[in-house]
Image (cartoon, rainbow, N blue to C red; front, side, top):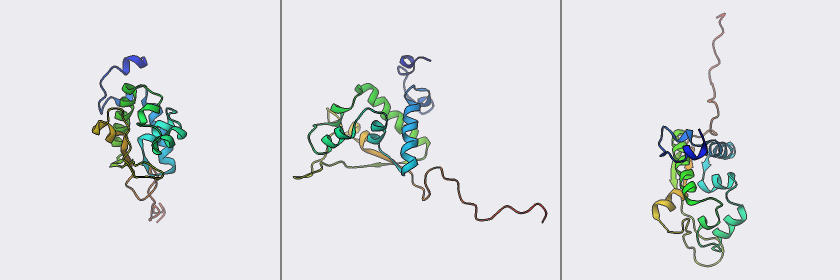
Length: 153
């Protein structure tokens, strides 16, 4: 299926894996879970090459009014990316955790904006981290306390 055809379909829990963006999002999530237990949308966006760390730092220090301004992606595609990430995180049994982002540096701690419109639901989609709730690293095999019985016993 051609990418423009798949992206015109409505995303759903049973079809999001067919989206042409899914393999890249999945790979970014795998990389994040390889080194930690939290998947943040901002880290996925950086992993996809749509945002540079310097731009993120400028936004965190209040030099950029809203994060979407420096993300190298149109807003429709960005919204789709966030939806695919949410479906994928759900399938991986990651738990959503809304995180408050505040300005770094001197001065009053102001809440940062993700979107131009300041839409609360959209900003929440950007600020929701997905956490692996297990005590072991993600996808690690469970330890086997009892060795298998010998067939000769």
